[in-house]
Length: 297
Image 1: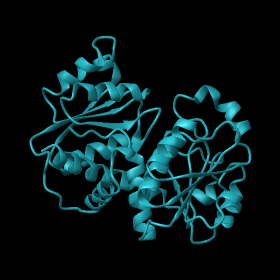
Image 2: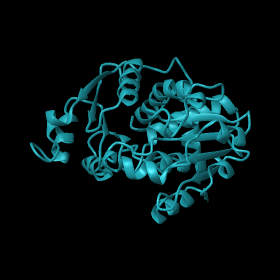
Image 3: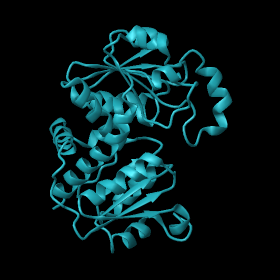
């Protein structure tokens, strides 16, 4: 059974197939008469709406589940919850705190499991990002992506996706917020490499894509003040975009802390593609679901 917990589970060819499917508006109704359970430990505007509509567009019925409704490892074990949900649904998607949770879900091997976000990875975001880049840049191979911020789950999945697509990846972050050695190893095994910079303006030089994320993601809110000090000077503002050049596009996984990691003129400016990127979360989700249906048929 095929699951989707991280981008490195795909071959470059499979990634290309998913992107192709994501651009099609007339995919077969592969979930016709079927349900998909979507379990959220962490709330999300884009992930919930994107996934629910993607399921509907494939003919299925999405069921949103709050964590207190199932009580992960409280009322029932993670494994027994998946066994129960598989009685009603063709797939299960989960947006969780610990990556171990989605790994335990796949151990049951009852239905395909999709990682909608974990502390380790955000593969669905990365697929939407690549779809946006392909639409804007036409050819991905040989392009350069610069991520300004922490080497977090979003950056990790994006770096793997870039590796599979033949793109160069740069990370601009203050000391202590780089990728871990394990992350670097994973990215290298996918065929990529990470060039690290401490200076954002140096990192974006000749970049095709400038990307950033909030400095204190969900689960790190208690570190907000500390991180604001550490990331001072890492805002993607007009000067950073000017260093990248007028042809570079700006991306952000959202939600954005306006005036913190990105300035308003950049977020709302002519180089920003954040709303097309947000819209592509639905299209890319549809592509992933269609691919998983066919792989598991």
